[in-house]
Image (cartoon, rainbow, N blue to C red; front, side, top):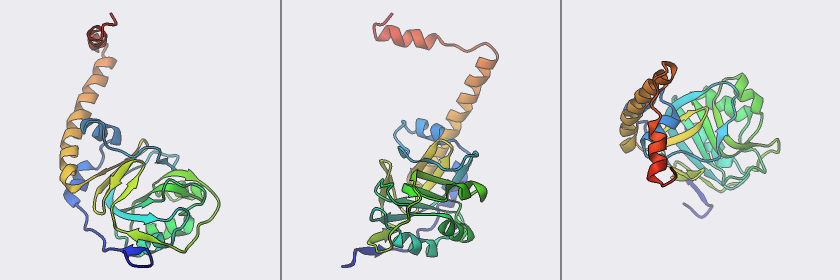
Length: 222
């Protein structure tokens, strides 16, 4: 980082194999399969309809309420990217709205994530551009910096590195490193299949719930 407090790095190439493997899986299933340790907390979908994305993380860290470096990140977005912004969890000013969303969409980005606030919330649904954020606020941002582009960030208690695979749906957001993406996909697909079998057993009236009393007996409750 230079004396101005501004640090800009090149975009990381997407891990296409991991993105392809994780696409279509539920965040809850992948999180469960990896020990229920991954996923952002308190960052929820803005869109009202069902949404799902899987793409390449372009990360930004900004001073609370300031979006200058987000504008810079928009210039380097490529098709399939997900813009991920650490706004310090502050919701006193919106960091992103319809104009910036339109730029991101025209660059080929498939979604955006903010540990901070956005505005023009209805337009994300109108244009079917997936967005997750900590809040919504009509107040506009400052444009002074400092900030960083394509550096490790933390959103909702989850570390995101540039080039991570971002998986998002109506339940939230997960970031997986290229090293973990294929494992998460493998275990996630196995868990998804097991859950489908459990649901079918419920529908067929054959669900085995004996594990509940077994667990309670082990705790001395029965």
